[in-house]
Length: 199
Image (cartoon, rainbow, N blue to C red; front, side, top):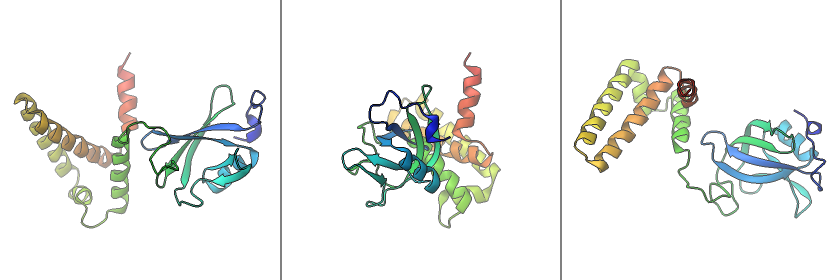
């Protein structure tokens, strides 16, 4: 993808609007603009770099705060006049020190963030981590924990104990995410399978 691929003829300032989205949680983080130099620098460095309309200069997100956004993927829209930048944020995206410039719920997409943590634990296997302990025990132990948590979730549902149900259901989902990682799958794979069935 090149900057020249975009049609900016309708944009009076010749700048490319960029929607920035967290690649793990899918949360929309911010909107900014790129000129050709900012686009090229973003592609070259792998860090989101924009053009400041107020200052008239380039700025790499995080160059003063340390809250960089590492680029994971970029997608042009159907008219090729806007860019979706999916990235991994290192800290808050907004100058207010909030996760996003939009005041959507902070926990939005957290299950995907949890999946990313579990995937990293599987890669690094840090000592003292319960997730590492499960991976060390192997698929049988992880599957057993999923079964135990499923039974506990069902019991609390039958007893109509909503507080305990929520607690056990959360345990179930966590252990299922660990089992999913052990089996080599992700939430995206589950989404794809469910989408196939939704006809």
